[in-house]
Length: 120
Image 1 (tube, helix red, strand yellow):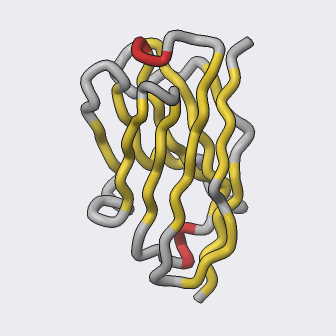
Image 2 (cartoon, rainbow, N blue to C red):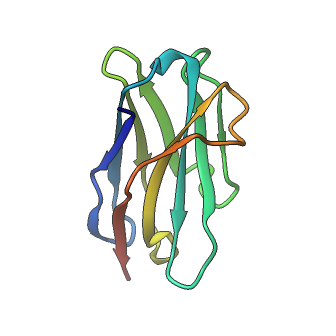
């Protein structure tokens, strides 16, 4: 059974940091790209970042460049999203998703999400 389980969300003040984790199981981790998405109330889902587990290549939304860092621990089948200098507009439910390949554009599996709330 494929599972993606997010953790690490919470409430933080503006300027603070959080590290989200996405633990994957049920598929060959090295063959997949893992992406992070977020959705705020009343807004469309937004792609935040993506990493290819095979070669470690990454990409970021302009809104988070320089503040967020995605990384992968293939031994633990886990992808992290380090979020620094958080802003109230980063408040959203954050989801991770897995894509068979490395193009970071068509995702096959999704997690349930973790809430991130940034207070001003």
